[in-house]
Image (cartoon, rainbow, N blue to C red; front, side, top):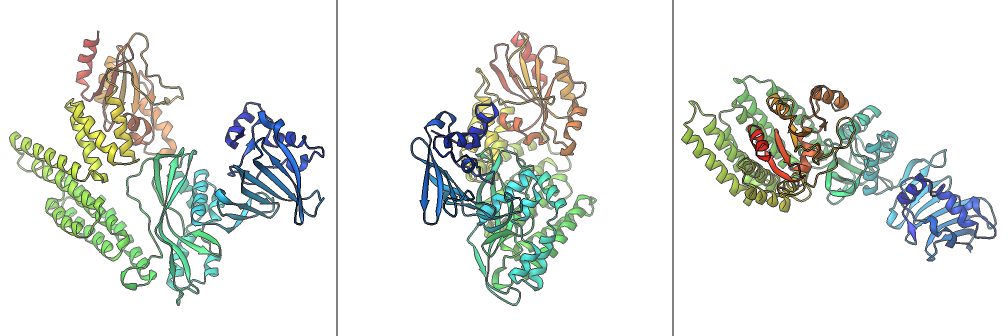
Length: 630
């Protein structure tokens, strides 16, 4: 039997074995010449997943010497004759170790050329790294693929290891090696110079990649060859708009994209231009996407022109957004029109960014319409829809259609003078009818999933759980492994638990203690999702706190994640119940696990531990429901 390294490390932690080296020494004792000094070795690199013997099988391991060409060495075999380790020395008979070769399932996966190189083989990959003065740390890469380079980037960001990232980031010296010059070199140089310890640390802090998250896949198109020209000394191999899938705990359902941008090949080493971009893990909104400084525009224009245009327009766009944030109601419509035209211009000149820019244009108009400061919003959305339906992808087509449906309702609800109740009721019915049809037609899109979630929430307010379940099932069927699908699954678990036991996630309170969702003290339990902005609901629950056990789940998004604990201690001070607090608010683990979309929200568990109600949204009902339980 051969155990993975992570399991052996657990045995070490509980004192079952001293070290892996100790196991290998014990195996070597089986051999009359006792080559302990040769077998007392581990890979120089921590991420090598090679086989080691089970401590219980140590006495059955075999150690044999071998001679091969100019080498002699010792090989370690598992009881089933599977090769575990081969140690090579040169010249024959020398005590100086030349190489250690490590195996997985009998196949070599990693090789230490001691003091010189670390090499990965077979399923281990293709990397070759030059070792530094300590003969352990990789000083630079000799060869590394795009997949492995981005793996290194994820590992570096996860641990805030700037030096590790530097080894896969394009440097100024690389620019000289590639023979880049002129505007191309200038644009890339800006990206390279932006890679500093401080900027990298800020990015790592912003991304907050979980410690158990790992590289999952490389999302990129075909590699491209940029032909030699006045600004490129030799043909240059590159990847454009690269993204990485990062998975938490190896779970594809908890994945998110990290946007790397461009990769270029320097010798046999693929390197990243500049710093990646992304959103805080678990909080993706789609506001960030991959971009390129190398991608040529349509019509054969050089990468330089594209990059320059995007840079200038990007600066103008940032300025336009700043002006919109502080615009007066009188100035807002004109500024909104200008921002939309700028976004359309960027979309027209940069096909790779087209859908992203069109989506932003839709959102700019819709935000103005929601605020009541853009009276022409409905007509503007219609104009955008015509353009998007001609050139846009399914996601942006769905987005503009969803916004149009909502805008039509706003046009009635926000009209002056106020609409009659009958008119408002008719508009509501039309909105629900159109949104229902939309959710079915665009079920495979993000906007379609959002619409289904909205409809499900409406049905929960109406206490039509069967209808809500139908919508949630639609989302889980069509939304893949996205956060919205996980929230829908949480809602299904919550709703289907009524009358039975709740399958609750393991959570911890702010003070570090474990949450117990079961009944205690002969009283029912309520799971209370609340926000600090709604003190009226908090007061109502306080008035009932002597009748129930309260599990508080706060849904505030911490304004400053670095000082989140202090913020939550402040807003929970004086409450007669403990609280689960997550800086991610409604995007935190608990609301997603329970499928909760808004607050206040209560799940009521009876004295017998069974769920009585899974969706109390009107807190005035809570007292009446509790009376019925007595």
